[in-house]
Length: 356
Ligand code: KG4
Ligand code: ZN
Image (cartoon, rainbow, N blue to C red):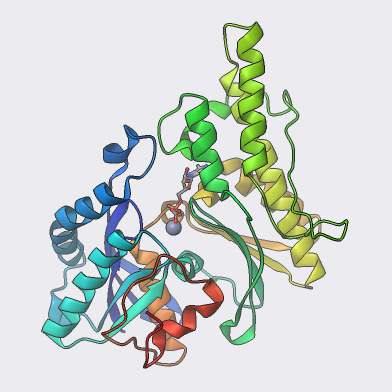
């Protein structure tokens, strides 16, 4: 039963987890997440330098707690993993250096993990988790992607956002409406008292340059601008901004766009299973709409467990164990970190000569 110690520090959560697996069952022995939301909320978003310093401050304690609550010491750990890309470089470095230093000190194998592969792996904790081939809708603060996970876990990106990610749009619209950071959970909270059909907002598309649209790609910056114009227009004539109705209408349109394009992509590629992961996958309107609409096309939907939608180290541990199980992968201790790396190049993290 291999046990992995996993570290996630790609953005504003300092997280360490111990995950083990036996045959097909993945188990969380501990998953400590220290959120920095309070430190960044007064700035309206994540401040990279502040986040990196906070990770440094928090990691010794989070690491100790993760081992303690898994009732294991470092000798009982078989391998150590950390997120290495994509993310904020200064932040990634804290997790990567901690993990590699521990590997050197205790002679353990090291695995550098792609953050988005971590999000994909969050469904491995579901009972009867879905097997490829399947389509993944990955919706987070930094990414909105449609990914085909083929036989032998071959990863192919079929769609993406050309501007803002869905979570980024939630955060920016939240700020426009005077809500706290991060905007996603706040919009969801106030939207419960709003009318989702009150405002007609655009479902923006990306042109293919030949008079048609790219079917599986996304654009959310136009939607954000439409909300800005709407609030300006209402402010000219009215004293009170109906923020609940705006939030509900915005949330509905984002969910409709994500659901419609995911289902089209799934049908066109003859896939029968959609998996939804990432921070925005916590959104209840999206979760319900995806299940309802997919069932009309006989598509099965698997949603990341609510507690594992936003960033956490357990999903990084599951991705590392899955790599290990699928071919005994190991990364070079010389592997560094990178702000960007497309998910279909994640296998390069296990090359003898690392990509960065
Ligand atoms: O996956 P994640 O923790 O970090 C990234 O890898 O980016 O996602 C964070 C994003 C934020 O933009 C946040 O506003 C959004 O996920 N989010 C939500 C909800 N919970 C978090 N968006 C909509 N509804 C939610 N309930
Ligand atoms: Zn993430």
